[in-house]
Length: 413
Image 1 (spheres, rainbow, N blue to C red):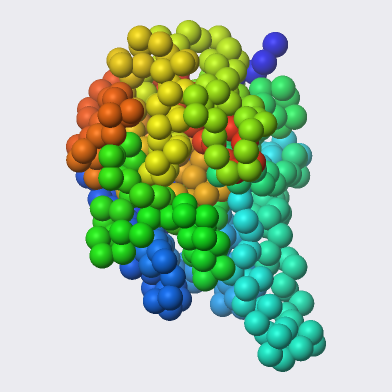
Image 2 (image 1 turned 120 degrees about the vertical axis):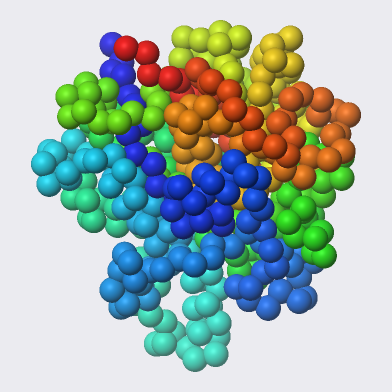
């Protein structure tokens, strides 16, 4: 018999704010985190906009020497985890360390560091490469550093499944607790690849918005005039906990984990099938895992990237899964405000559905001014909506045809 699993802590570092409350306030007020790229000179790029983290203070979390040796994707994960653990009220010195797991997701690891030290190598030779190069770039460094920071000696995994990585991490952490591998897990996603190589690469694929003269309105999921996603960075970390463990210590509970699904399109390296078949099966698997019917879902945080193909295919998938109930669903894409954090997206969006359930507020899809006729569902255009949410689903679909879906619900008993 599977054990019940609940969310007891949330930590966020996003373009809307470097903590949970500031991010949530920006989200429900429909504030865009997108602006011109300042991280590097992007004047020769086709896309010159991004959703960058502003005002992050590494000295709050690290000594200067340590910060220098940590890529941003690791720094953001640690900061978000610190907030999540504090929010949970856990005293990590009083829990059995072998019962604490860490499972994180990211898509590309330390690409900016690779870019930086490739230039050092070309200009100054191999002896000038920092000995911290490899520990700075490999994708399991967030989970490794979190395990050391919190003395977590249970399962330790890093999942790299493109834009589904954060959702897969949350789902696998859910399963690890449900099946008894640990009692507590720090989980979520992180990413920071706003650098020339990533922006140039995605631009070459025609994946990024080129609305350079109007950054705040560039990410416009489900809108007729969308022209690509906006690259972003940040981290979302949750504390998941076995229900009885949380109840006995009097923890405040955001939501209960209910279901998890994962599938593959087996179709194309970078595009979903037109009917969204793989994503539809993934939602169905999550519903089956949760023991729910489609009509039980109130809210869907859509993958909603603002690319012409994704939004149309995801809408088709939602109609396949939910049938007539699709038109009763409340759906939104928070990427309209945060941009697309790639492997980190599923972590923050899992946090968002937990916050939505707790606060009874659904964040809007901003910039939805002229709905695409093929995207004719209720995508909560431009203004947040207060509504009691019993159950919520978060979708993530990644390059390589990998799909991940998690479902959370209000705690019942």
